[in-house]
Length: 505
Image (cartoon, rainbow, N blue to C red; front, side, top):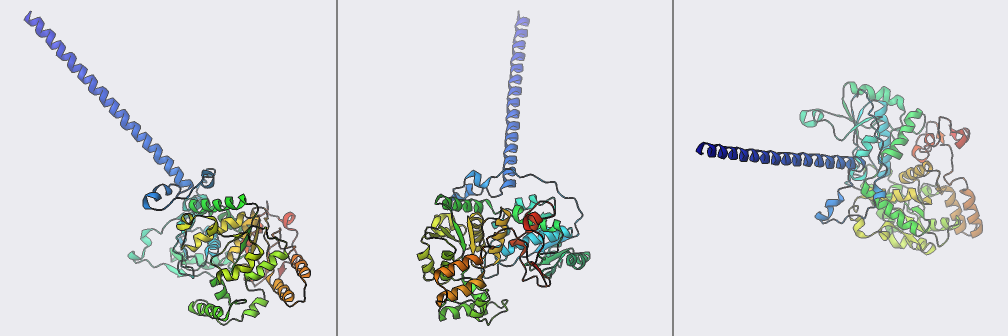
């Protein structure tokens, strides 16, 4: 009996031990499954965030901005999340070295320079470092490349053409004693210059820094593939950040809600007037102030300027008062919705009075948006200019009062989008007509008819670029009319017409 009881007790103990082992094994399996599930879930989340960053690197930054006391934009998904990009295969090539570039000028001058520098890097089989933007010019904008442009998209969308990296490898840093060759390339150069003069320098210098990039590539005479690469960078690779894109589209929606709209690029700002020497309509005190500003910048070579001579040559921006008359003569009425794309107008409200009287429906971004929307862009002139750029490209009609970099680059974008109406004002002819009207020689009807006749063929229609042999600075700008990118194949005659007298000597 004792032996049997002992055997039964031992069996019970064994069963209990077995049950405990099963329970422990089950708990261990459950724990293991939970850990694995967590790892899988987090891996998926990381991948989703990575894909989101690939499309729009700053899409998620707004989530934390309220914690830091900064209000977020009201961003619609369709405004910032386009169709997923096609990931192109990286081009396989042996890099001849690294190209650093420091862009100079305002937003659109730098934009064109970036397109040129990508093209140069592709031509010479170089690795391009993300360009540095101008922080020392009149505007003193501290913005970096990634404050204005979508860096991830820029790199990925061009990977089948050129390798682009965010920073120079440490082995080429100054701390290790490496001396980068710094130089400005020759202006308006063709591929021969870069192949014969610049490429050989890479045998000795693995890094070259172009410290000026404005107009360093010719408008004309380049191979078709290089011209089209310039367009690809401009129209496809250079996208603004999601924040800028979202606010730009918000402005467009507000304007479109009130009907069609005209964008007036009123280039009547202090820097423009000071450096051009154009003081027509200014007081003596204002003219003296502008002259002092011009002398304050040693890099600006032209100091003594006769304003009326420049105006008669068509080299001055139209004044707000002149602009009001020209828009009326072109047939725009008091009900026209006009968005002014510019910085602060010199002379402020006093100089805008005549324009606002003629066109009461004048607005600016500061009037259409909540101050909180603009707060993060204030004191960043290039980011503010990017907002105006987006609205200008989308407008029903675009009218620049001066053919500066923004006017020309916007014109090119509008041509690319189907030759949208852009009125290219003939300032030299308009100054003559304005003076004749003011002195009573031309009646209003005669003046209006003359203005319209002068601009019948200046509405952004298809046309060939004007080529001036040995005068590249005076010929038509590539980015205002990238004709090689506006038609299929290699022959644009059907669209632009046969070659004509646009080629001059």
